[in-house]
Length: 203
Image (cartoon, rainbow, N blue to C red; front, side, top):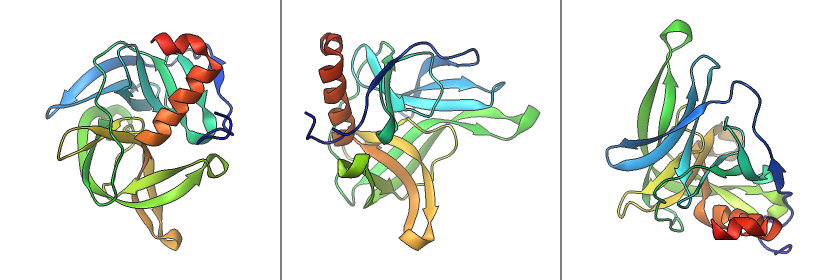
């Protein structure tokens, strides 16, 4: 698969992170399922989506206890977390979506974690990644800090179509909204992980 999408990415096995990495927890908001890894004390928060029964997926820049595989150029990380997998599908431009996750609201001693559901539409193909091997999309909803890595669902049928990477506001490029990593890029990263680490195929 070296000539496939994300083929130029370098996957890596990594061990547990240093002290301060947060704990995980499954969450549900208005029927939308996601998970989060939160540490108000450390000022860190990330969200995740359940990839299969044993593995979750998030963006590589959020704190996790451990990871089994990363694709750094695509900001994708898979890590062990048991749960009921989401039903995944390829996104379509123009469709209505909802990004879910946990966000840090407030600052300092007043900071707290709150679940969020941000609605929008997939409105552009924006950012080429991994030397042209894939593309991120932009949806019009403005996600909040902490929602990175959380699932983005198609409103019409509830299928997960990607995960949130973060918010972008780049007038010079006509980009306003939240960058999402679409399902096809996540699947390509997982295929690459299995190729590099065959033991993952049984998970």
